[in-house]
Each structure stands twice: as structure tokens, then as C-alpha cells.
Image (cartoon, rainbow, N blue to C red; front, side):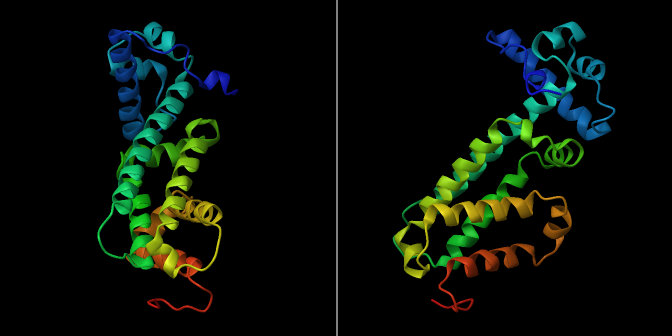
Length: 217
């Protein structure tokens, strides 16, 4: 299926059209969570949304285009949560922040994205998994990397970090962090009580001067 077939047919401009599209998206999310991807059809979506199938097809060419729209809506919400969390970390605090605490704040921001509609997120990633068709994925990654690079350039972090390129290090952290959190076996890892602490240690050791142990300032 081409990306063109996975895009919406037209953008809703009037209030009534926006309400219809939102109803279609909400109905699709509910059906995906309750019945899974295979049993979610356009007929079921239209019935749940309280619209005709013809109205649905005015905005989306098929079921998969609706699913991609859900992906993108979820990505927007997750990005907002991440940006808000990192913004709190970058706020002036009037005291030095140890590198380990800064890393813990970044990991906390990444973990916070999983609190956004977790059931829908799980279904979309595990049963559908078409992130290559979601236009926001690259933008999401770039914005996250830019924010992390800004945090790494903070004077408090610089004092404890080894000499490295902040942009490159930020890319490594984002790819590693989100790769672990949204990978195929992420649920089992995250359920382990050691997960967050070990992930923080992994990234802290990457950033510190070579040979510096955990807790070394």
C-alpha cells in the first residue's frame, strides 16, 4: 500500500467536519483496543462513530489511513508530554544539578511518553507497527534530539561530562532510550523493577569521562 493511500482524502475545515473526523478517530481507537486491528473494519468504525460509511470515506480512503492518522495524533500528544517534561528539567533552579539527576530527568521524560493513551499505543505498535508511514516520526525524533542536546549543553552537565559532541550524544541517547522503550520486547523490560535505574546508569556511564564510576563527581 502506498503512502498516498494511507493519507486522508481531505482536511476537515468546518466545525461539523472536524467533529465528524474526531468521532471517527475516537471510534477507531476504541475498536482497536477492544477488538484488535484485524477485527476493526470501516463499517464497524462508522457504526461506532455514528456516521455513514459514505461520510467516513469523504475523509479517509480506507481503514489504514485512519490508523495512520491515529498514529500521528498520538505522536503529537507524546511529543508535547516529552517537551513539557524536558522544559521543566531546563528551568533555572538556583543550584547545580548532578549529571546523574539530569539523566534521570531525561529518562523520566522519555518514560512519561508511555503514559499517553498506553492501551492505544500498545495496539498501534504491536499489531500495526507502520511507523515508516507516519510523517511525524522523523520530526518527533529530531525535536527530541534537539531538546536533549540543549540539556547536555547546560553548564551543570558540562562540568561532569567527558568531551563529546552534544548533538551526536543526544542522538545516541534518544535512539537508545526510545529504542528500549518502544522495542519489540519493551514490555518485559519495563515491568522489571530494575529497568529505570539500569537505563539511567547506562546513559550516565556513556556521558561520564572514561573510567569514572557511578557516583563519581
